[in-house]
Image (cartoon, rainbow, N blue to C red; front, side, top):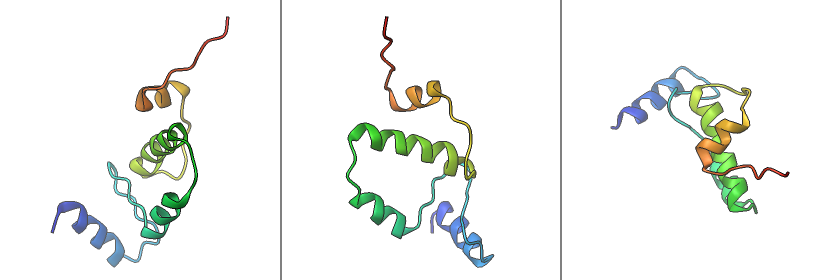
Length: 82
């Protein structure tokens, strides 16, 4: 059994409704299935993944995310109007 599987199993044994393992994004299958059915652009999906990483991947429900963090994680830039 992989280390991540052990951590998830331990969390489930403790009857935790939500599983947060710092450094990992853990999603229940129903959420993954719902995401797979969503119609969204590639850009929106990249932003969603970055937000999930910066919240769930750090064991948080929410956090302040700066534009610069999203730009760095997604490789996207903001076009400046002059």
